[in-house]
Every structure is written in C-alpha cells, then in structure tokens.
Amino acid sequence: MISLFLASRRKALRAALCLGAMTFALCLSPLRAQAQVSAPEAPEIAARAYLLLDVTANQILASRDLDMPFEPASLTKLMTAYLVFDALKSKKIDMKQTFGVSERAWKMSGSRMFIDPKMKVPVEDLIKGMIVQSGNDATVALAEGVGGTVERFVQMMNDQAKVLGMKNTLYKNPEGLTESGHITTARDLGTLAARLMRDFPDHVGFYAIKKYRYPGTPAANDSNRNLLLFKDPTVDGLKAGQTDAAGYCLVATAKRDFPHIGPRRLMAIVMGTSSEVARANEAQKLLNWGYTAFEAVKLYEAGQPVSTPTIWKGKESTVKLGRADALVVAVPTGTAAQIKTQLVRPDPLVAPVTKGQAIGSLKIFRGEQLWVDMPLQALDTVEQAGVLGRAWDAVRLWIK
Image (cartoon, rainbow, N blue to C red):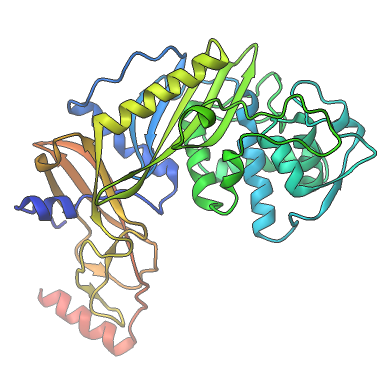
C-alpha cells in the first residue's frame, strides 16, 4: 500500500474527497469515523429521529436514531416518484400521456387530488397532484399506470430499495397510509432522497411548487405541506408526511450559494414531530445550524485526478484516480487548516480497470484522528495490453 501525506495546507485540502458518484449508501458508512473526533454539537431537536446531511459533500453532519424503524407516511411517495421519474427517463411513459382513474384510486382515503373515474389525467398533472397535494388518489393512479397493478408497483418499490441499498425499508403500498410492516429509517430516507435528486435533476423542480390543483377540482388542499417553501427562499423540496402512527415528518432540502464553492445543498430529515409547524421549525433549525457550524471546501473540480499512479500490463502506463463529481469535504467552521490526507491504494496496479471502478481511498484526518475515509475511482478505462506487453511488464514487476 502506498501512503502519501501532503504537507502544505493547499495540497492537504485539495486531496480531501467527497464521494459524489458513488451510491449514497456506501457514502454513509465511512463517515461513522466522525464520532472519533470532536464536532460541533447539534441543537436540541424535538423529533423522535433526525438526520442532517450535507448533500454536496455526502456527509452526515448530525443525526439521532438514524437506523430506528419508523412508519414513513407520505414520505413513501418519494419512492413512488423515483419509479415514475425512472419510467419517464427510460421513455416507458411521457408527461403528456394520460392515465385513467380506477375505482381504487378514486376511493383512496386521506389527502387527495380529487380526481374520479370519469377523468383521463396527464402524467404531469398526476405527479403534481402526488407531490404538491400529496394526493393518495394521484399516487395510486400513477402506480397502476406504471406498474400495471398496485401490487406489482409495490414489488418494484421494494426491488428498487434493495438496489439503492435501503437495508431497513419495506413498502406495503405506494402512498404511505398505515399498514403493518410498512417501515423505513432516517438513513434510508436520506439515501433515497439524495439519489432522487441526483438521478432525476430534470424532475425535482416539482418539489418546489407551492400551490397546485387540477382544473375542475376543489380549490381546497392546493398548498404544498412543506411550510419551509413559504418561509425560506433557499428551500426547494422535498416532501412532508403525517399519520397518527408516524407523527409529522419532513424531508427538507435547501441550496445556498457560497464563495469559492458555489451552490451547497443540505438536507434535513425529521421524523415523529408533534405538528405541521413543529416539523418545519425543527428542520429549519437543522438547516441553519448546518450552514453555520460547518464549512465546505472544494478540493478538486469534477473529473480532476487526485493521483495518477503507474499501472502495469495495460495499454496505458498510468491511470487517473479521483471522482466524477467535484470533490468537496465538510469540516467544522474554521478548521480547514487542520486537514491532513493519506492516499491508500493497491500496489502494484494491474490492468484491466474500468472507468468508475473503485480503487483505493483517501483518508481525511483532522489533526491525528480520522474524519472521513473516501473511496476513489478510476476516471478512465485502461484495457489490458497484448501478450508481449503483459509479458514484458511481468518481467519488470519480478525485477522490481
């Protein structure tokens, strides 16, 4: 293994790493090292569980009962939206396509868009009804339109949860009404919400819509339940939920601009608060604290290599290691100068390697203690050399 400590502050900062293109579930695990070093103390949050995530740096800044199972209520609709957006992206459906309204959808209890079986509703309007009005009728109509049946769609939800690494989530319906065994966790919600924004950037603007109603339906229930959209101009999503069992829940995202970094996004998730106002206030408290207690440091631009080591038995002599996205690390405000880094990778590196393949990691220290351990990726594919090239490198490796 090769270890490289960078002496100067500039080099130390540039070698720190945010896990951008890696799946979010992998990003959460290395950050448990934060417990080993002092970090700003989070404010008191009146919620049964919460998570504050720096989405730009893919780092957990604060949490409580991160893996405790909770009923997700209408936060379930984040997964429903993920599958609908995926169907749009793969062109299985389109925005102008219309779906019928089944008796099942029409008779859904709870929040509604107020559509009925006489209607043929465009997909775009059903999405707005599901997100802005939290309509259970719109959600079922979308589930039936994409999955064929609600039961098939729920299976798709659970299959996608496994793909995303949501290890403690089980869906029983697409809308979030109380049902035995229908559970998730704050960690899994963070995984889902971050991937939703990253995988479907063209569609997440739906979550910033403050008011919507389908023409011909009652004007009641036309306001987004995410009160922070009306209070904080930097908040642009994502979803609120409430049932008697779940309490009042919210996934709130904000994007604020900072010099030298550009847009920086944080996400606050609160579970089991006491009221609609409380969930907004507690999420706002987390967001404001996160932006002031931690600073983000951009270390590398997107695709810029962290290291370019020698690779053996390949058509190229070197391979670039780094991340596809800009490399950013979040540290307590005023502590950027304390950062040290250690590059760890296999030696020797032997072809072939594929673009995006995980190779080694960058350990980021504050002082002498580990802060974050971030995997690196190959930025390019290096194919295996021909027989003579491989033989020659085998000899060179043996001599080395």
